[in-house]
Image (cartoon, rainbow, N blue to C red):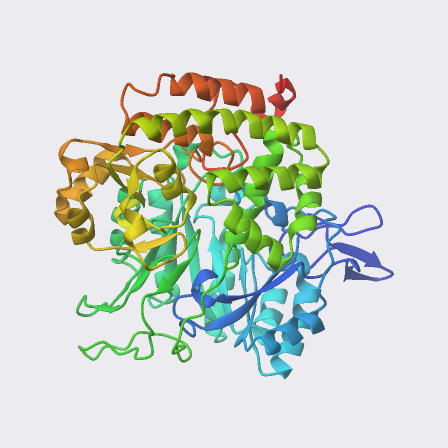
Length: 590
């Protein structure tokens, strides 16, 4: 029987569960897999979904399951998008609604995996939620059939549509045929009164395609908010597809020629997350980077009329106080938590995703995740995190081997730090004005190496940091500046920003600004290489070892590939993009 939920039109029979792998044939009808359920339910701020013009700062319950009808390279939530039996306890729609009401949420939003894979379950959840006065929405690729979109528009209030591009080629890259159903459905949802915001992926080189997305949306309505998602290469995606923040800002600005409200994500420190009045150009409300695909308001937003009198199209009343998620919770940050567990397991010789999910099941309680969130922020406590993961995976001996390797390097750094003064240092992400939180691993690496992180003087916190004024940097005059290895910026752009903002610290004058290699300072045991790199920059010529040779040793020992051969991207667990998984058998742990 043909599935009528999405345009893939899979044939569901006793041998096939379709592209999503979540449906079954029951007599003469297609049903949801009886084992399906929601795997998590966490309260989040709506801006982390992300939705920017819908009940600003509202508290919603984020839910997710497994399965997707697309197969996108570099997917940020691939483990959930790919259907597999996780063996986790699941929540029924009734339990989700009970949780939302108990936590005082305005509504429920399905994210991370594609709701087309759980359509019948999502419909049941939505209809019951609306009976309780809750708002309902989702993030979706919107590849639904016309029949389904008609039904969907009857029970959802809002939707973030993830657009892969305008061309059919962009969609064929994700395993489907055409972009046309997506734009047809966006127009239908808009006409039927569903609040729609669109996220468009920007890969290096697809600028013209993104511009065509904006033009097509403008033909539907120029007031639809467009969220430009700077592509961050995870999975096997090469880092060459990642556009710089500067290039992304230029593209984002050009899209204002077509749409009234365009925002730039995955770009810490950018000013293009703010809402500007399309009439007079004044800032109406301000936001800052809040983790992958997320943002947060810097102050409550309840007046949607600019001083010039122009009304900004926003649905719903903004919250007086923003909800702040704890630890790994909120939007797509949970996917990074998966990656951090996977990163340790890979170094322990367990690259298989199935084993990672087995371990995750053992540590997925809110309390355990908060403990882990604290453990991974410090070099010494991270060793206990390795021990915990090794124990849950049943590979204690390999865990001790990794701990020993790291501990020997920590002893070397401690000795160097005791004999030298590393001076003041500043740690930022993507922009000189986006400071990483004082308690994060990156700043603790600087202090462990004998430097004095000026970030420790900051009292405010964000995720993973927050915007600061140029005066903070100038007043504290760091000798060295480090740029995060997770979300970075080319040095020529960075120095250009320092000049633009009037940052005249010694680090700028003496050209002592360094960008860490990808994932060498957070999220992976590779932070030990980042620590060596930091120490080498703080004490040029005094470390006594070759950092690149240390990297070759680490990569060969724990990944079975030399660092000099690797093509790293932003993944925490993968040492290289491309074909590396086929070569992991070379890992010897000798």
